[in-house]
Length: 519
Image (cartoon, rainbow, N blue to C red; front, side, top):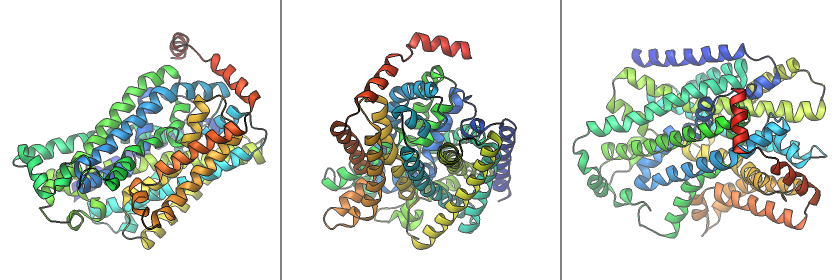
């Protein structure tokens, strides 16, 4: 046990050191919220993907691999496609426009893109974002307690509280830079740990060549890409639900904040390959860990949840204990905490920055100075962190059978359905209007709640909606509403202005020169 705690102590020490170093570079509100737009492509790519993956990857996706087998690889495909579209198609234009508008938040970009005459867009965006951010952070704090409980046999509540204190401390001190730098470090830890475990575990098991046959004996559905029973309506819904999780990368503010903070468009072209390869490796490895765990720990006819916990989310800890000595186990505890804290820190800084800058400073106190704004942002960070802690404790009490995978996906889906359709249309459709953007946001927000708490309870269709989860129907609804509102209530002047801005978009050669001159 000493070796585990020694490794965890080293890990936490690195986090606090990075937070302290980042705090010395925080002089203005812009520094606290976007790090002065100084991120290199390595830091931006690792930070964006570590933020997007979260605890649902190490505890949730590994559990899905153990429960579902090969069909869980649809998650890998969906995430890879989402990251590819975001970084290769959306990121360059988004970076160009946010630099042109001098935006420091995603909401800043939206207000400038539509030339907003009122504060309605700011208010709706900030409130919707804060709501689902609290849910998403709560899921991560919940996962922190589960990680300490499964790896170190701590009390769940004590583990959640310790993780909360650590991440809140370095966020409050170092703001966005602390989040980005620690994300880079934590992303590297996640990548190494996830890549190594299935390789070492696979080489250590007997009859490695017969794993496919043994899995088929345990449950034929484990080796089917469509799941148990083959192609049917329910399985197609499950597959679509997993494959479309990647929609959340197409404009989620916590991911796109990294694109605002990156140095220039040249760094985006370099970082997109880092982001894509990182995503494929960690997602594929996570599913493979779950499948290997099912092979090692569950026999034919055995319910995997009996040995691997609710949703099989303890499969990672069981695999690590089975494969490695105690000091390496400590490293894997750090990897799980890395996934959790990278997301919590990013979300906290983004949400507190949005409430401070987009609501208070822009609407109620335009003359707010940098030092006052930074102090207020730190205070809001504390309040939001405490609220998220209370929500996670409440959910743990009211829903003991919850799974980390779907708890986290609900928050991820809410943010994605509220913002991604609108961001997508705003970037590539000059006709898209502010009225349509507001309607799209409200639709994505409300449909996430309706889908989760109403449609899934309807007899006859509820099972299929639950299998599909909340992201696809909510995303599609928001996209359609944004389209139809634009068609029926056009804004010709806005279309002409935005088209003119896009025509002046930098060419690749100009961008390369600009990137070299700024380097």
